Length: 297
Length: 283
Image 1 (cartoon, rainbow over the protein chains, first blue to last red):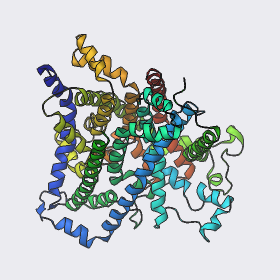
Image 2 (image 1 turned 135 degrees about the horizontal axis):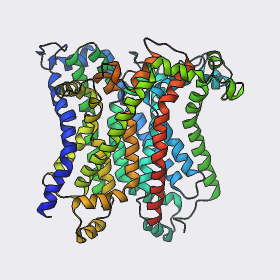
Image 3 (image 1 turned 90 degrees about the vertical axis):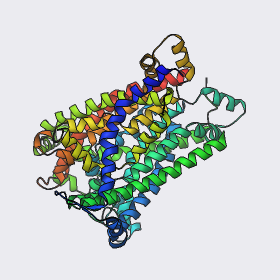
Image 4 (image 1 turned 135 degrees about the vertical axis):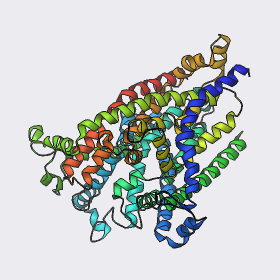
């Protein structure tokens, strides 16, 4: 390549990288350092080494609940959303699907709504007395299957974690589907022509041509999805009202409460924990995609 | 010409049924939001399920909207949110596409490493960096101003990653043809790359606008004075603290805050669906 493109490359990335550096990378480094301190936001912090981390793992049961819930949340929402989004995208990409343009819009609607509105809507839908879900269950007498009382969906029970997982899938499905749709348009038509010459049915074409062709998008969605799931905050906060519960607390909600209580160092330690967790999972996924990519070639 | 053999009709029927049923799940909560927003408090908590409130449009409780608007003082916050989301959307899509282009198609020293590091910043939880991002905004004089909601979002790792993945799919032969015609890299970007990735640009524009419009956590931290409050903060107050209001009023507020994002989505979505159709036809 010429020297010209060498210079241009940097000219194109300089400003975007500066923004990310100043407002994300630098403050993160400072945040990591903060996690080794005890600091209440006043003039002086005190260096305490690993004490924040020790306290998290040994003296903070609420942290362990939050950790467990966050992991369950990520494991449940990310693969479900990705696979469902792929299947929907394939259906809505097919020429024979009636109303596919309208449905693309419909599926994307939940992703468009403000998280504050999502919180209002689902607290109302899941309200134990007047909520639509319980009213619907009562109307078809399905409430009897669930025992004497319909569950308090957002109370401190495993139901609440299930409800949050459901709302997350509800909210993100359209987003992932739209990205898959864009990827599907880039699959060369000749691939399918070759397959139909070989006599492959549509099901096999989907498994052996479509799915491998959108692999970069799948990798993208799984990786970003996992990162975001591990960092979930807003959704849980607005749906549960930020209550400190055993079944709905997540790492970042715990962190925010510590922050609000001015235990900044401790709160930063929770943040570093989230960071390490997402980095580990992502590195694993990245390597896995790389090695299987190599095996395919 | 058919892309591949159509599946048999029972299968097609099954697919339609499943997809439409799922679509209903998507829509019902939204329909219920609008429905509730037009009811009286008594109608809302009644155990009969009615999607259309009694009595026809004349009897519906349109005043819930005025009430939500008044209680949360939405008028002045609407304009803040609009300015921030529009500026962020236009500039960050441009910056991210430029960077994505460089990472996908240009060769320069340190490209791989820089790209990996950029992607790695996506891992960083806001909750680790917001404390010192706030401090830096303070040094720059941005705290409690709209700049604090705009400048940090003028580029982002997600957008760069997404643009890079999309631009990587543009055939190199197109670029080589342009180079032979004497295009500079910037002209390649504006004349070859941007037209080929229109659907992806539309998608990123929508995502960026929404992310900015709906941002909740950061404005909560960085905005102190009433003047610069954005819509989500204003609406969130309806259910907590000072103003405890009825379900219908809350649903009216939820509807009000949802309308602009749906409009932006519909505006770009047409472009985006047409873009999809075009690429599909040429493919």
